[in-house]
Amino acid sequence: MSLIKRPDQPQRKSISRAFRASSVPLNNNVTPLDILEGQLAGLADAFTGLQAKFENLQEVHETFLTFNQSFSAFLYGIKMNAHCVEFPEAPSAESFQHVAQKTEIECDISDEEASSQKEEQKPPQPSQSKVKPKSKQLIQPSKSRAMNIKKFITRLMNGLPLKYREQQPHRNNMELMVKLLVTNPEGLYMQEFVRQTTMPRVRCNEYLNALVHAKEVVKINRKGQLFRLDPVKYPFAK
Image (cartoon, rainbow, N blue to C red; front, side, top):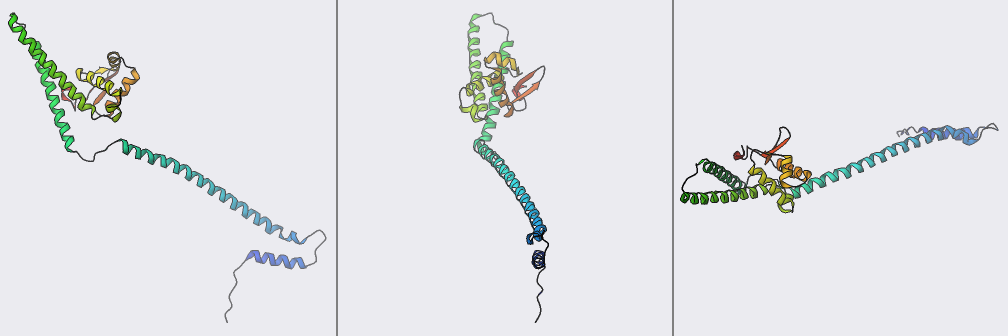
């Protein structure tokens, strides 16, 4: 029959030695519990270390709670951004239609500008009978140009965020800013927008920055901040 070796248990050996020592006659100044003083001190140190580890675990737990709250706010922001902003993955039929209409409007505006320049370069006619048809010819291009500008503004507004497309008075103010940019293709400075729109500088800056972020307008630092339509997208603004 094989003998099974019992595992080494230092605490049990210490207790056994303590009991054996308690059977030995002691001095009057020594009590039986004094023998356990060293073991109890070691046990107290072990519990102190265990408590420190539990405190560290509690700090880690609180840190993870803070991280979870921050990360949940980040995920919520991404979710709300996905609900508010549309990111088409591929061009649709509306995209091609938008490009075609934009090109048509640009051509119409360029033709109207060329025709208006030709009309201005014509010498005045001495006969009064020929002056009346000329005035009629001048009225028609101005109306056509106004319609083309209105179409261009509507098409450009459709590419802006929802706030400037549907909320008032932001839509009317934005249309006024775009109209100034169309009628002044060489660009305008900030003070000109403030003067012609009678809006606060902060509001004009907000609308112009929205157009810059939408890549419809470029900002040029030339003796100040000059804003003009993007000449790459709109060749007539060159």
